[in-house]
Amino acid sequence: MAGIRSKVAFKAIGINGLGAEVNGAIVDNDNHEVAKFESAHLGMGCFYITPADGKTYKAKVTYSNGIQDLIELPKVSGSGITLSLNNDSIPKAAVRIEASADYYRQNRGKTYSLVIYTMGVATTVNCKLDSPVVKLDILKRKLHTGVAVVTLFSPTNEPLSERLLFIQNYDQLNLSVSSKNSYAKREHVNIKLNVLNRRGEPSNGSFSVAVTDESKVGAQDSRADNILTNLLLTSDLKGYIEQPDYYFADTSAQARQNLDLVMLTQGYRRFEWKKILDSALDSKPAYQPENGLSIAGLVKNISNKPVAGGSINLFQPIGGLFLSARTDDKGMFRFANLVFTDTAHLVLSAAKANGKNTTQISLLDDNSERPPVHAYKWLGPQLFNDSTMASHAANDMAAQKAALAYLNGKGVVLKQVNIQSKKPDNQYRTQSLAGPGGADQVVHADKLDKIGGTLTTKLAGQFHGPMGFKITEGIMPGADSG
Image (cartoon, rainbow, N blue to C red; front, side):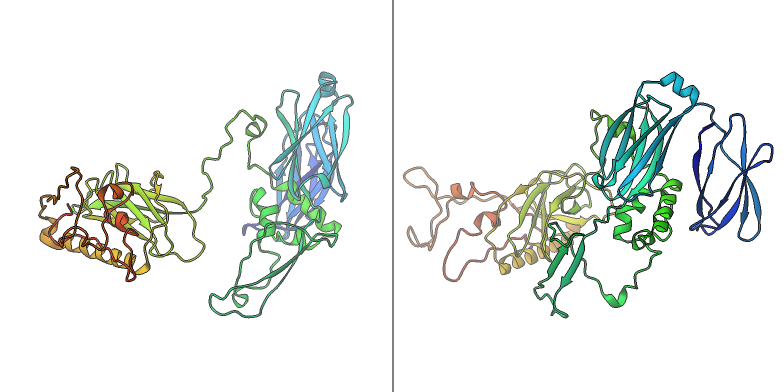
């Protein structure tokens, strides 16, 4: 801006993509030198200049190998307003808003907004342009540690100028972990975690633990990105950040100034202001976070065609999980939001819409087309033991393989046979062949109708006795279930 002293930051990058050391001078269109510059850290540096109206400027650059270059700087604006920020102080950041003489005359007395955006929270400070220079301070302790964006908005809510700063409140927790030196396979692990804040006081929080093999993990490298630098720095900036851990390991004034050069040279563009300021806009993310694991697949018949509207069941031989859903018009299914606390063994079984189980199931990997989530029923814990479900799964798989192999998949459909015994009260009941009262236990059809699922599901848990009762199902080779 013409007539306003401004801080200009730069970064020189070599052909390898890393910062390159440079130096040089700024000259005007009359070849008069107005400023000198030299990189201070990893190719970054800054200089101050007060541009004049009607002048143009160029940078004479000399690289470390002696090669020189001439770079034209952006044209000078004759009228406008600027935003500058001094972040050298630890407790606060000084903000300076300065308008050119012509701009001040046209907008004197109008109210501008200063929006401070950090870690998903936007704070607005209104300031009236009652003088060419407006100063205010930002208390860092009221902001979250990490990258903050300070943006100046016009009275009509149009962004005019923007500046990044890094908030370092030195509020990192001190964690110490104590445990045994060695554990047996799948042995219960007890960890004692001691968490203290900067004042040495215990701190509450939610913590997660990652266990790695120390022999396979190299020593900490200041040139590498880590969890801390990613969360607080690199994920909010454009481009590659060299040696990010340096800005956290070194707390000197020089390191803070170098970090401010990073803020000036690598801009923040991860959001749109209109979406943040307009609460009426739909801010729902395009992709929702997953709440659990998913199992997806495709059900086909023996002719390799998709089975639409088929029944698909998912259950655990051990654990009691039993879910049921329907395939879509493409034969696809997906069970979503599944949560398991440890290793889980699962079984899938499918049947066509008419109840016949001459089907084949194929699972989809993460790169396949993602089928929609269909509503499925929670059938409650099933009273199956391990041997029952293992036998059921084995028989079901054997029957399906036999049916597919027999006569190239062509089967013989048996006619339905109904066996009834009529009692005086006109109710049909199943009785023992040895006569009334000779059965160990009788289960009536109306009771089974109240239980969902396949016949195996209906019968499971209905029989009792000291030796237990095993139920299996399947189809004979060459015959469909009827």
